[in-house]
Image 1 (cartoon, rainbow over the protein chains, first blue to last red):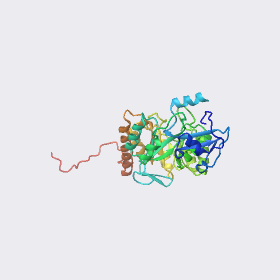
Image 2 (image 1 turned 135 degrees about the horizontal axis):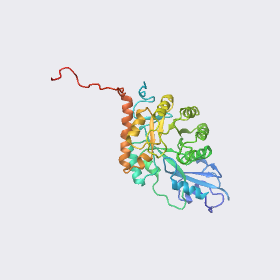
Image 3 (image 1 turned 30 degrees about the vertical axis):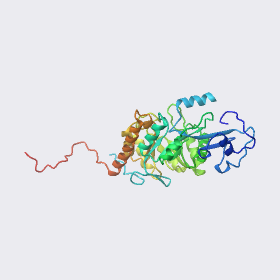
Image 4 (image 1 turned 60 degrees about the horizontal axis):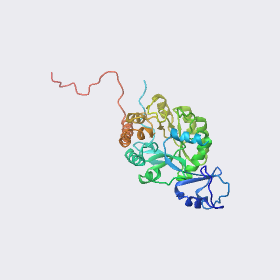
Length: 77
Length: 269
């Protein structure tokens, strides 16, 4: 999940996962194995062991990320 | 002789219309680089904007969330314009736009695909590719591009809801480096708004952009990086309004010699 390994109950829905993380589903979006999960599917989809989950939100931004963000991204690669 | 810019091609006044949606201000602001969220809030309010860009980033799961930029925009009743900043391929940009739509329930996207890290110039080939895909998926696509008329035409033909040429490199504050190219572009692209994006350093730059006939202007660093961002935000608001008013008012022609403005008759001799 977002680059780190996390434990969650098998078959958990994205909605339940967000709740357990204290995130409001109205403010984030989820990608599972590279596919964006439609808002209407958040309570339906079942997550399985090994799924790669990316959760994003909006942050302040105008254009290209700051140099420090670029450096951090390079370091992750 | 070079004629003065025409008095605006879109609707008159201070409102900006994109794909049928009307925003009360022609100034669009970015929400990055502010010293704090409190200053961001005051500056965004002072700018009088009705549309602001936000970036899409992974949630940091190790940190608790505080007030977010979305809370601020919501309370100021400013519409959200998600951007694809940080993307350097069409694929990344499309993926980011899709995530933004699900997170923000907005079909608007400021499409940015960067081809060079030093200048942050757009990769127009990838930009076009991403525009075509996203338009097909129902997005209202606002692509950041350079001041190249041919590319602007292709973006418009691909279904872009506006064209956003740069005035100078992003964050450079250099002002309008090629007013001729911008004017040519503004005069040729008449069916979608032309919004100058990037390069504005101070209020006079914003005024000149509007006097050139642009439908709108987008800036971030020019406000957020100023010594007093809140004061600069107000300056930019007035500058954009002034430039638009002056354009519509129709300026006097430039002439080489003086032209008296007091009557000659009755002069005391």
